[in-house]
Image (tube, rainbow, N blue to C red; front, top):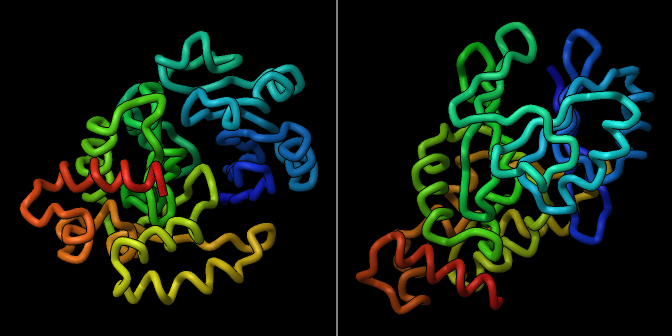
Length: 258
């Protein structure tokens, strides 16, 4: 299995992912541009097995109709995506394991908060967690907004399903917001050395050639939503004695208006 992270250069800075399998087939996650997906399939001589949509927002599904029409492929998404996700043919459930290659699986994570039809996908190799496709739930150095969901659910999702992941798990989000998110980190925790060091790397990165990939261990160092006990963040929010959930909610509100 090989993961191709494709920066779409869209106005929303979307990523599309192609998962290349040993048998010459591929899965595409959140196709922004069907034409670009088809170009890459042709370039790498791959057949499209299925589309996976992390959630129902237009920028994650707009490539579905053309790809389904051309490839007669399946579309996998959350059951709450019925009537919203074009071509939905397989509804995935929490904990489901999808076999990819020998010893390689995707574990389905039901991850409400950004929307109520949001799934993330944990990659397992020989049973070991190695990567996670996070859609608009977890970003590099940030988390998603809750305009189509609710912040309480997002807190539970992040706290219960992402804080516990191994430090080495690679994070593959639905958008490139790293630079802006690092600037937000430094606005609430100006002494964060890791954010200071990563920011110039994010500014200089050529995303069309080599997008920067963080790991969960990096997120613990510079993602404010992983650092809810941090004293500087709590003082910034006037929430020194607040619960972690209260800090998370205040952070998300601050980020909404930042």
